[in-house]
Length: 397
Image (cartoon, rainbow, N blue to C red; front, side, top):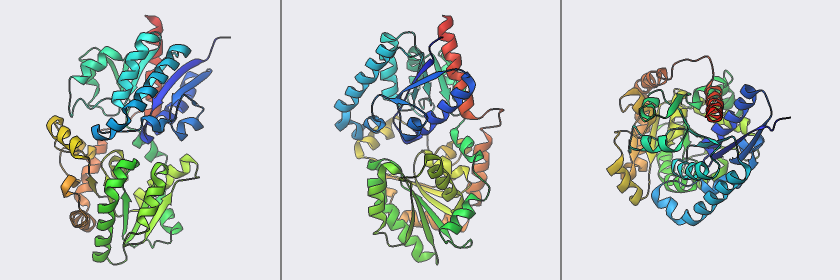
């Protein structure tokens, strides 16, 4: 009896954990034989049977200023993951996002477990900055799985096989039950005609610490302008204590959707139901903005990073927007209030405008999501096929 196909997956962030869990389910369906999953992931990947090497939280840091204090721990975990791969010899290593850690790990595995097919899931943003990273990726990986249709050519020009698999938000929206937003309003006793503000300050401790203050002030100021305003806030498990303590002092009542203790699928469903139930949203920059756009809810994006990170980003980034839906639509439909502009009064003013008329944003969302197109398979299935193709290609060499 042959040994099961061994796939090692590494994901540090909650978004990567979701991608990894969906990929694991799809690999089971596509492979049709025994599988072994090991590596690094969160609760969702563990629920799918991941054999955990160490906690995902140990590498879930981002931004230059945030990473520096944790370098010794991250390097220790890097060695641990590489040693595990060298010892266990997986058939494939799938690194999910976490670009710097992923590349460093893949290079070590390439040396010490050369039989493993090396797959990066979520491409580095070579179209936004550091285009030379496509060439570096080609020297490391056997295959690149991209979320956006315009990304593969950057890597294919360097000789790296790249598959556009699609963004997972498309798959999650398709699985949402009809009327989920209305059902959540009913559960929370929010009248159907009451104005509802969604607040999503992020899932990392560093970002929520910087955003909860201005976001709370903005919510209070908007409530003073909009009679009957309600606020709903999905709370990520990773920052639940911090967020729940902060919103208790906000000048407006908040319906906090605490994910602690809930099955992962239920927590995700409630979060997306909140996105759809809201009339307007105030969100951190990142994946959540694309998720809210997928529910066609007008929004304002606010974000603050440390000064060191800001200094580097302003000199390296080549795009004019940090919100993906703006980039996809080709214009700044969603207001972005970053750094010193991310203040309560400015956020509240932008929210009031979006609440009064969100038609321009909704039109941009339709245009943006049209670029994803249709396919006969969901993103996780296409990603699974890419991983299995990489394994087959490695074996044929």
